[in-house]
Amino acid sequence: MPSGASRSPGDEVRGTSLPSDSGVAPITRINLSPPSDSVTMVELRELYHQLQLDYTAAISQIERLEAENEVLRSNQSRRGAPAATPQLAKLKKDIVNAGHAYALLVSPWLDPGVLGYNSSPDVDPLNFEWRWPSGPHGKRLAKERQEEAAAAELFKLLNKYPDVKRNFGDPWGWEQFSDAVQAQKNTATCTVKKNRATIFGSVDSLLGINWSAKVDTFKDNSDLIYYRGEATGFSTLWPPAIFPQHRAGEARVRFRTVSTALTIRSMLYGLGAVQDGHQPKGNTTGVHLGIKALTPNLIAFAALLVRHSLGYDREFKVTGQSSGANNREDFEYWCKWLTKNWRTAAVEKTVRWLSAQVFGSFAATNAAEHVNVDSDRGIDSDSADDHLDDPDSDDEARLLAIAARPRPRATPASFPEFVRSVHESEPIDIPFDPSRAASTRSSSHRATSHGPVSSPHAPLPSTGSLSVVTHVEGSDSGADPCIGSEPPVEDAPEPPTGSRAPEPARPRTRARATRKNKP
Image (cartoon, rainbow, N blue to C red; front, side, top):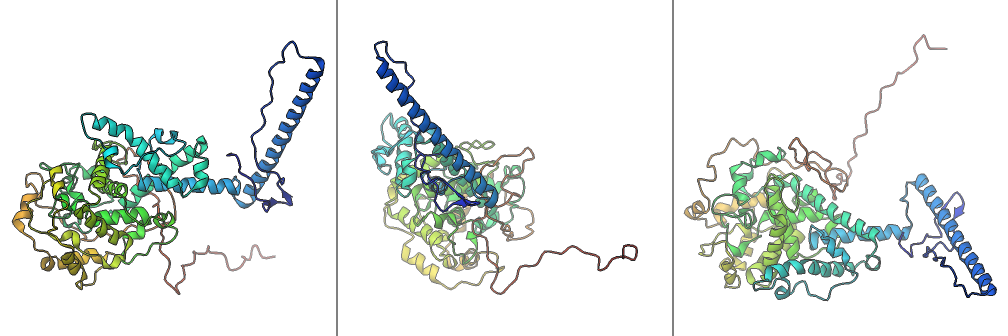
């Protein structure tokens, strides 16, 4: 138990309260080193007397600790309360919250070296020149500074939790923090996977995908191969899934997709966050942690989950078990690209657009990502970054005008209105060149015909009770560990006003005793 944790005087059980001095202090170490040969008898008596006092104090403190432990056990058995003092319970809650914030805003992976810092390193993690230096040793230096930058961002988060900051050097705190980071990563992954039918509902060629099928079936699907970036002419580092439709490879619009926005909403607000008109509640992760702005790391994490959700890896790890995808390296590279270009005109527009979808009114989502313009910058290389501050060809005023136009009402109601409206308004709003779109995909690597689609809009998974996934394991059957398990719902829907929940069926009982049993 961390030092300083104490029991509230009001916590009693069966009329027994904890001692008033229940604050736990370190037990005094008794000096057992033998005296020197020149010590007099008087000095030996004084030393013996002092040892007796130290021993008595240690015994008294042990008795107080045993009494406190007994009260805690009694409280737990009677009320189902956690076996911890209120101060310790609050400390653990703050550590868990800090771990969740770290997974979302810093990195879904925690390097052991980050926990070795007792204070914040004197570095600026957003200083691009320091974080990613150039030169022949730049890659090695960037790797070395990765932990230092993560530690600086961690202690910036801990400013919100002063008790955690004071006790962060405790191994118990490290264990709780590491478990919280892992749990948040797994919860976000499973929530996004369960929402795939809606997240990718704006992608025409993915409407017929059976997302509840085994992940092994996704490996050879031609549409998924294309969007994962595994087709010839594309790369998994910049897969078409993180670009708007028909604009794959344009550096100006990286990450500006409906699927990225819906993924971030799922990560922050749970399963129900992709529903039209959804309003986050206070018990959701994003509201509880006070996340009100996007960061390069959060966008990069969401983009990784977009690609992972289209793949055939059962678990989200540093390296894909089946695909071999370099998730950690690509995450770092995307963070690098976003940090470098964060203040450019194009990336600022992407961040504004994503922020409107994630934190704004979800029913009035604009169709900016689908607007296509003639451009000769549709190349997938870092040289395209030189044009990110050029006068914007897809000017914001035109996009906002398109977003403000009235749109037909969506049917069915379970499908988000903005996704449906984008498709219905596309022939009018979007100047689309078929020849340009045809050159984007390689016909030799994408099938041009598909089987019949049973339903154009797959139903959303049902929501369940609040739960946190602490560990996700793959199975030999090839089933996705996130499909069919208890969903990590953080925002369960409320019943409509005036409605009553159905009563459970009552067991049938005999109306009266038989003649044989009648007295």
